[in-house]
Length: 277
Image (cartoon, rainbow, N blue to C red):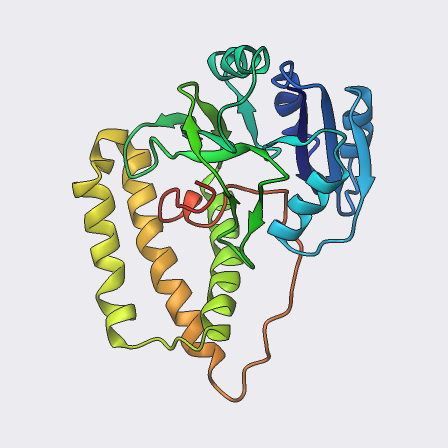
């Protein structure tokens, strides 16, 4: 069993070395870049990665493009702000010694937010299906809810995928603004409209669920911020959806990510989804 690791990037010189350092269990690394102006490409090549340029088509499409360019059918897809834990890397190494019994493998993801590893707030365990046979699976999703879907059984590994999210609150706010725009665009294209309940009731319920029922209070002040930002994410998403139906509003314009995947949508706002589970 040979594995190709794939990473999509845009200006990831700060994160990329950590991700590449963790990939000692794979046989090939493919980095697909969509126009970095920093040292991302040079760093990737220095680690022996194959670097391919591709204009930004969207999250799922870019990840599928990377998988299609890989030399091996088994794909380990991670983001530039993620890294394999030693335990997960060792599990994958053991898995490679035999014949895989599944079409894909998922594992828990542990997120670091403002310097703290988050173990509650709906953020852990945040299972992600990231190791898969491309002959039986692919990324799906248009905007912010991309995930790997496979035709066949999925097994679970125990080691953590480490996710290094926001280092500053300002970074979280920028990410939230960008992703709520994409989420609102998706809602509009689905024909879904915002009503009073979406704006008045959904945000406080999101805070209550995250901080109390998902025990965000156990994550210190970071848990309080995660819960507050989750509520703000929900409000902003529906407010932008409401705005988009007004006749004077300019239609949404597609834009590449500020980085390969700052943390995903709900992952830095309403808690990990999500999706690529």
